[in-house]
Image (cartoon, rainbow, N blue to C red; front, side):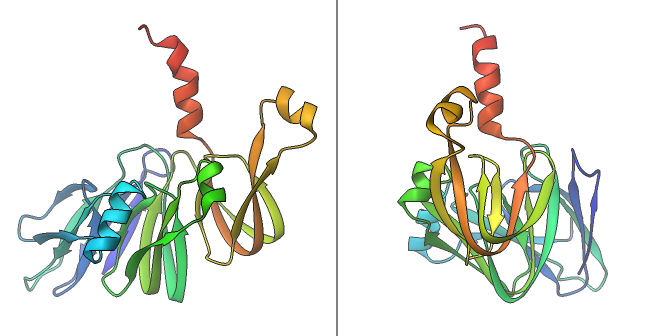
Length: 221
């Protein structure tokens, strides 16, 4: 399998060339176009329990689609997200990555996808009660609203709510004030996500929640 991400960073789109016998699993609705000879099969995302957790608590699709090249020639499929922004291809080597709701796009078939309990602190901070976890050896593709910034966390790091996209499992979530009580209130920052541990995180440069808050008073009722 070969892939290329084009139109970065605002309108990133994933172009995948499947060699004979190759396949890729993608979130429902991610496909823009594909060669007509590619075979598509829809199935639950994991077992029944994890699929329902992923759909109703993780805000992901109940089903995923697996696209397979059963011909003797290379075929192409084009994938993207519903929201404009950047895409990242991450190579996993017997390790894992956790995603916030809506970030996952696609993965190679050797990877395992599941749902973990993220904790009540994650829910309070606006990042969701459950998290999508992908592990194994292969390539996973994910995206964000805006540009994506990779950061190595050592110890503690503060992230504004709504900007965390993905993180390694050793990162733990906490919640706290951005500064002192008065400065946190009047600065508009309020509560922030206090991440603890050692590992990589991926941040998005824009927040959909902030966009909604900005547009809401401007939309006529």
